[in-house]
Length: 156
Image 1 (cartoon, one colour):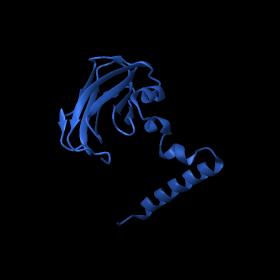
Image 2: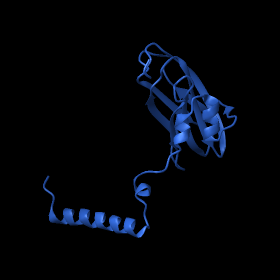
Image 3: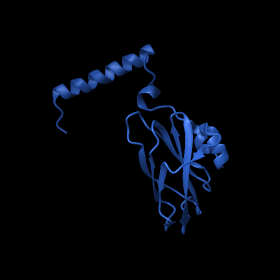
Image 4: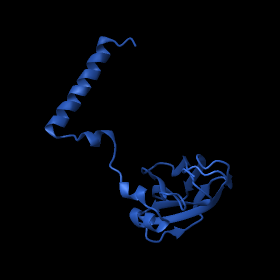
C-alpha cells in the first residue's frame, strides 16, 4: 500500500492514545464506535406496541409528512420508500410496516439544521400500510401509504 513512516506513526499514536483513554476509563469503547440503540423498539409486533415503545401514544395524521413508495412492489425483499417532513424542528423519522413480523423497520435521528428527508429500502412480507412517524418539536406526527406486494420478502 505504500505507507510512509509518518503515516505509520500517526496511526500508531492515535491507537495508543485511544487505548490509554480506554484504560483510564475516560472513554468507553462503545461510546467511540456507535450510539446506544433501543433494541425493544425493533422487536415490536404491532403498530400500537411500536408507537408505545417510541413514546408516541397518539400521533397526529398530517399532510406535512410526505411518504413516497410504489403503489405495487413486485418484490417485497426490496421496496424503496422515502419520507419528507415539512414540519419545523424535525428530530426523528421512523418507518413502521404494519404487517411485518417486526413493525419498526428503521429509525433515523435528524440533527438540527439537517434537511428532514430520508430515503431507504425496506422488506415487506405482504401488502401493508407503510407508516412514517415524525417527531418534531417534541410532538409526533404521522402519514401512511398502502403498498401492495406481489412477492413477499420477509420469508414468505
